[in-house]
Length: 259
Image (cartoon, rainbow, N blue to C red; front, side, top):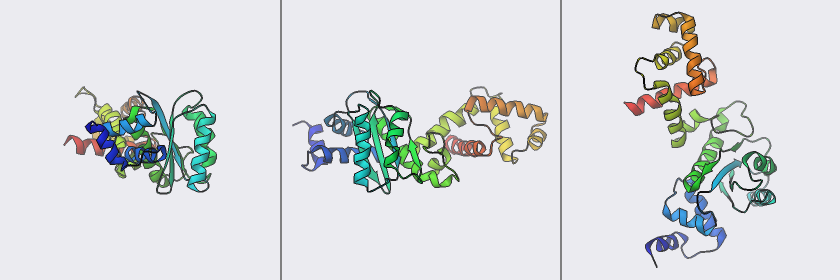
């Protein structure tokens, strides 16, 4: 018996039925464990190769067992063969392999009745492989935990809607997203590009065009143009209150990380 097989048997503690393996694999993925042992567990459950997957989560409409059964049935009715369902606190999380009619939008619509209508639900983007499965489940969990921070959350919530709140909760994926795709994009490669300084100054001066222009010694229209360009490159508009909060959080993360 090789060492990897021994490790898996140690994790399973002698229990080798599919439901036990699935529970263990789910626990590993949701706690950010996606090493070779977890790959082996997923292989046993027929999640093999470079599969594409996505996660959906919410508060079960009924008891977790009934909601889990409904979610599994919804995926299988769409032609899916790989679906993993688990609970974490009050939340039910569903991981589905993308295949046949099992696509994010279609599956989310089919599964929604399993979740409470008056509670937030979340739909992750498509991710790849075991590491992607862990990413999808973790961002779903963090998004559901962060949802109360929004006064009127959309349903389902999407990947970018709770980045600052997820970062505050300790979601490393959200922090990395804010650092790589917001902060570093604003910073750019050209030290003479004024975009970062303009956005930073605008946020520091209470989103005032006039005060920013005065601080930078430029015309307010110049500030407006630079902010528009920043919105085009990052996808976040500093003149929008919500987007400004995302940008402020990204700048804080970037400054701490680059110190």
